[in-house]
Image (tube, rainbow, N blue to C red; front, side):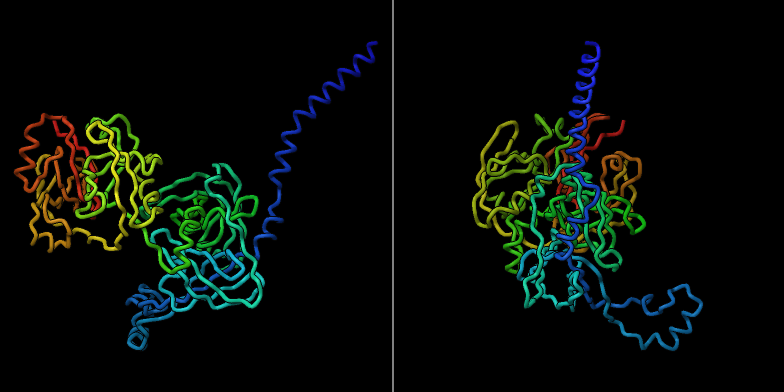
Length: 468
């Protein structure tokens, strides 16, 4: 009896151990220790790109020894004047084939300003390539090669389905070494790294180095979920922080890239995130939405009645969480069609219909600064006139130009910078220093002042605490 009971206990323990081990076995099956099968399947669809660019030589480029070499004077004397001021420079990159007809996706910065493009396949065949379409705003380009045989291509996956922690594989041409495979995980999604209004990167720790640009970032099913585009590094090599353009964004652009040019809709609003200080100052319920800091004159939003200080909560029923989401949402809308915005204006919810227009490529110039002595706020100001604005290359001719900011001052703590233009204070226009002083005099020490500032053509709200 005791023996049979003992055997029963042993069987129960063994069964429990098997059940406990089952998830581990499933996990091991799911995440194999080798990506060799994935690489064999996808490697033939990855290509190396050699781009030849015409470069203007600077003075220090003329000597092969560098500016500090003791032979520089000798070289300049005998050869300097005969050196060409333009020369051809080769740049390396990566791309991947997306259909049997030879269409290849890569980065715009790999192929822009090129005089010749060559593509080398994994099987060592070489082709001359032509640019089909480019989009500098998202750093995406579409090129084409022509082959008399069907070409291997990579399937496009769903980047929205990615989760932080998912395995990914990068294939590229780092430092011209040819197809090289690295692996890692998705470190973060929806990263903004300051490259433009359409920043929406996948961050990964899969090693990405110079030459990887334009190569595919793959999920464990061998589907492209991103285009490797940038790295964060102080040394120029990989430090485990790489960025890829989500393939879902690229998929939306493909029809226009095939036509040669990407056209985008725009609303004509300048927007920013809602900070805790702005929420309190403007009397908002939450930090959710995109705050309209300015409205472009004669733009679609101005025609529809959108006002400075409005908070855009949704577009066509889709929530707008912050200012970074709205440009991406608008850009995907048809040009010349109406969209419905839900906005909050002074505590009231409104629905506003806006008819989009095509985005212009024009940009205002940067402001220059001059030295002056600042008052107790730590600001040196100059009232703008049309003549002064033209001299500084500014498109705005009314407001107060900041020409100096004292470090550690209230203005410095608020983040104000030389070249900024103060357009409003406490939501009232300021055309000269006297009008600003009049507004400030109505407030006590340690009060928070709301400023509307034009910075490089983009208006933002800034809060500044008055000194005690």
